[in-house]
Image 1 (cartoon, rainbow, N blue to C red):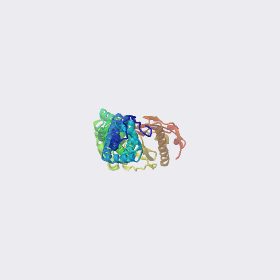
Image 2: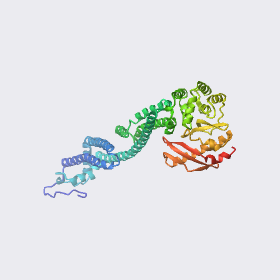
Image 3: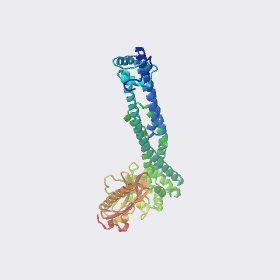
Image 4: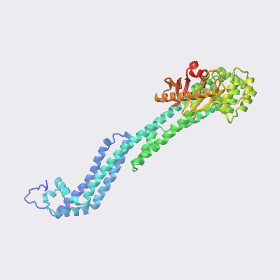
Length: 491
């Protein structure tokens, strides 16, 4: 058939009457309705391929949700067809009457496919239902395509968020393992009584880390899947926000706990524990004195012990602390509530060139004269150099030094340097540390890194940086030892 149906050519054939045309139009429009579920089925077959970028689990969920959407849309359209069928038949018949349609009995009984196509294309277009079905199917197809595209875009967000959360979880797990290794080392060395102020916070944060790690990558993905399933009707941005909030909560918790745990565990480095290792082997009176001062000063006292340059220095200090006069002088000079200058007082007391009672008397008369520190620099402990005190360990931002790595200052500054010279030297040292930490970061934050020697104000600095829970720690620093140009400078 082109513009007219093919006729049966029977001698008794005649033009179709009103009732026969009505039956043909009704069947044509009903056939349109029957095509709707078929169309929905064809769309469903394409979904797996369209959503191939999604993991099988989430793909199955999206297919299930889109199946429900297609079923709901097609059912609603079929219902509308039934509701408006009579009106649409009447409108289509009116169009037929106005035309020379040429439909014969043989075209409509039985109704041929070509006749259905002819009626639909030439006359049913005028009915609201026919137009609505065509428009709605196109609208539904666009809606499904939009959901597919959105699913792919949301999946990209899911993948990114879960990956980022997984990285933070892995980092926390690694930090936890390192912290547990350190606590085991404390037990093996029998140091727990002496490092309680450092150890207890580590134990506390380890418990918090174990709790945070209960949310695994798998359980977080399941949680995201469940929430996305309930949020099908939300906009793309709302779904992305939902994914970001869920993964962000788990990621932020891991970051916060890792930050606290690494900060606590950083006070229990292997080098610190090795310096404290002789403690359990000392005489009972020395151990008792040490424990008493741990109770008085806490972390500040432990830092003083770790700054001892040799086991002999450590043993001498604790022997002197068995004398009541020494403890009285120390606690009077440095109140427990303000232990900032404790390391200075300890060095005075532990001067090996003096007897303990002479050192004690010197402490009673001591005035604390410290150099001015560069902006943002904080001292962890102090060392006497010439006429002034300079930090023997310090931190600035994320960077800090080992408690004993600056011991070469005395050798490099020469005999009796002025406070101004010490301050200038220290400012250059801080600058050199920051340069070395920058090299370390650019090199991928390795476990141990020897910076390329570089010059600051005429002195060549040699620095080793270690990775301390993801942050830089200066483990060694010198500007040439006895060959340092600072040795002969006046200021």
